[in-house]
Length: 364
Figure 1: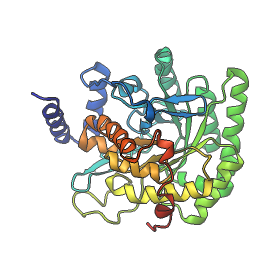
Figure 2: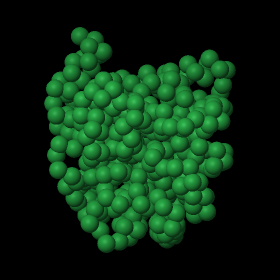
Figure 3: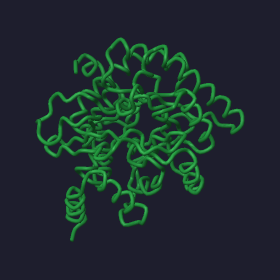
């Protein structure tokens, strides 16, 4: 039986399970070594250097898959250039009631309303300490507890807790599944948050000797005026990068097949256009210097290339693996190498922003 047939059979079996159960089975399979891969040798032209980090390739696993840092090394072995664990909150919390994940097979989309379910700081720290010598780039996505009285304090706590373990931090204020969380994208609230986490990062750097890069993850549903405010605050507070974007509450363009009206954030192929437009607009506002990770609807080398030409330096995916399996990772990387050959380029940076004006002029 060929690897392709085996992957197809495995996906069919997983799709026969309820979506969250299938996710848990996949994580357990990775923990036990039943699902593994060989990263192979990356094309050196795909390597990216940011901050003090060397990314062997630009493709990463987005936060949400490995919420509790159970399988970061297994993910890196699949061929990812980096991975991001979390979101993690100070105190463990169960999240929203099940069912809370829904596949849209016709649209190749996923709706989730997990609600930051995770095992908390202490459990994640223990796991990350056990793999500290393993190497590889593992970012940590920090969030706030649903019932906290001090949201900024929760984010600061995440920075303090993991400053000695995180390759980079993502400050997640863009999940639609924690009531009021996206309110932190408003300028006054965002300024307070970014000042708090930036100070915590600097205080930790005095002790650890390393200034961990700080990134802000934003929603695709923000209006132009709010996006301008966000980018200005990011630059003013010396935040190191943006992740564009989280899931959307928009349902426009769906085939109306399956549980498309389920409450939650929509990811996967339906998010591609909207997230790429916001990415390009953010790039135009931020200028060429700010690193941006493009996320949303990447399911091929072509869509990955589009993100780069729209302004992304690095890429993340998650939902497309639900429908296409882990072989997609290698397909995207080899496809990006082919794109460089096609255009006679020596690095992805040379391709970045080629279509930024066209994407930024679009409306979503």
